[in-house]
Image (tube, rainbow, N blue to C red; front, side, top):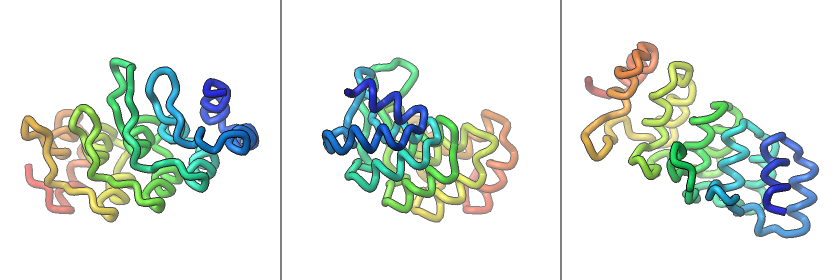
Length: 168
């Protein structure tokens, strides 16, 4: 049943996800064999209707996954949404359900740090800042989101972060 609901979440099969949740509501907070949460999985693939259904059925919006995949840190659905399709609709849904943009993933990145890696993330960064993301939050090694944007050469992101008071 776990594989079935994760497949349905990835493909956006809302009816199948609902059918499986009706059978076992605890699936809303399920993790797959890779330690990824169902909500994070759906968010990563930009499946807004599945994300909405999961949130309405008790999925923990701030749950950290227990990723066993070497290149995927343990993270929240918000991190996953930003690392994946970067669906504005999904990110807005998560934030509307009180996703906390200051939670760090297992690499020490907040959602803002994750967004700074992507040139096309200016709208996401604005949403995060308006929901409490801190432009002054830094990684353990002292790196700020603006530093990550600079490393990537993302001038629009750098400019936006500066508008909100980021130094550097």
